[in-house]
Image 1: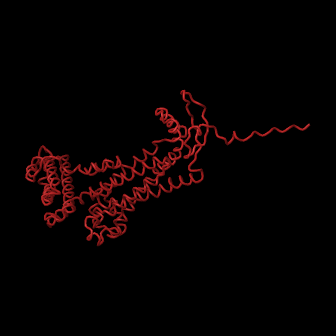
Image 2 (image 1 turned 90 degrees about the vertical axis):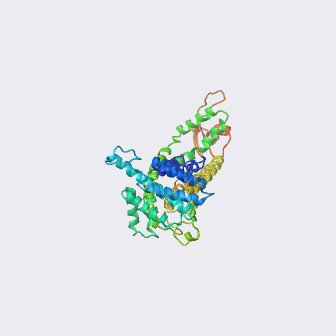
Image 3 (image 1 turned 30 degrees about the vertical axis):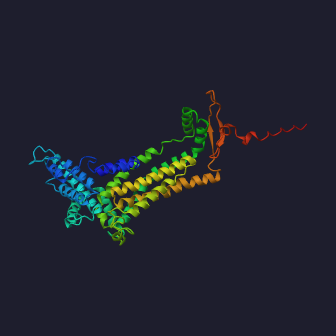
Length: 440
C-alpha cells in the first residue's frame, strides 16, 4: 500500500519529487544513534516504531558498518514475517482476542500482508545492497524469502490483474525466455489500444496549440509591457479560433488511474517474473556484472533503465515547439526529468518487468507522436512557409481603444507588431479594373 501511494504521487507530479520520496519508508534519520536493542524492546509495545528503528539502524550504519546494517535488515525481516510478533490481536486492539469479529480478522489479515511485504523488501535490499556481508550469505535468508514469496503469491493469486497476466503468460506456454516479457508487451499494447481515443484528442489539441504559436508570439511581442492586456488578448485569441488550452488535461489525467492499476497488476505478479528472461536479462552477463545486469525480470536492470530513460527523452523531443526559447526550456526540462527518473528507479530498485512494460508504452507513444504531431507539423511548415497561418487579431491602440479586426498573415518568422497590424496586400495592392465603355 505504501509503495502504491508513493507511485501515485510520483505519477501526478511527473517525478519532480522523486528524489525526495526515496526516503519515505526508510525510517527516522538525522536523529541520535539507534540500536538493535532499542528496536527489539519496541517489538512488543509498538511494532511500527520497531520497524522504523530497524530501518534507522540500517541507514545509520549502511556505509560505516555494513554488517550491522545487514543484521538490522535480517532482524526486521524475521520480525515482520512472523505473525506471532507482527500482526497480533493486541496490536489491532481487538476487544476479544479469543473471539475475533469479521472486521478484526480482515484487519489482522491486512497486517500480516503488510508484514510479509516489509519482510520481502528488507530481504531483497539485504541481498542487493549488502550481498558481501555474512548475514546475506546465510542460507536462511533465501529460505525465509521463499516462504514469504509463497504467502504473498497465494494472496495475490485471487486478484484480477494476477489472473490476467498469468493468462497472457500461459498463452505461450510459460517459456522463461519468451512468455514473460511477451506478456508485458501484450499488456502494453492492450492498454495503449484502450487509451487510443483519448490520445487522439490529446494529439489534436497539441496540433492546434502548435498552430496558435505564431499569433501568441505576436501578441506577446506587441503587449510585452502590458501583462494584463497581453493575458486578455491571448485568451481572446484562443477563444476566437476555438482552441482550448486545457483540452488535453482531462484525457491525460484519466490515464493515471489505469497506469497505477497496471503498476499494481505487475507487482502482484512480480514473484513469477523471477522466472522470466529478456535478451541480456538472465544471461551469463548477470553473473559477470552483478547489481547492474538483472538475473530475471523481477530484479532491477541498469541497461534497461537507461534505454527506458532514452525512450522518455525521445518521446518529449518529438513534440515540436516553434518558439526557440520554449524549445530550449523543453530540452532542459526533459533532461532534468530523465535524470530524476534514473535516480528514482535505481534507488527504489523497481523490477525490470515494470521498466519493460513502460518502455513499450513509451515506444508506442513516440511512434504515435511522430505520426500524429511531428510529421503533420513538419509537413505544414514545408508547405505553408514554416507553419504560417492566417489568423484574425483585434489589436488595441495606445489610448485603450480598439481598432476593427483585420485579417493578417502571421508566420513564425514575423516579429514586428507593425507588420502584423497592417492590412494584407493580397487584395489592396491589385489595381481596380477599368469599366468598359458602352457601345452606341
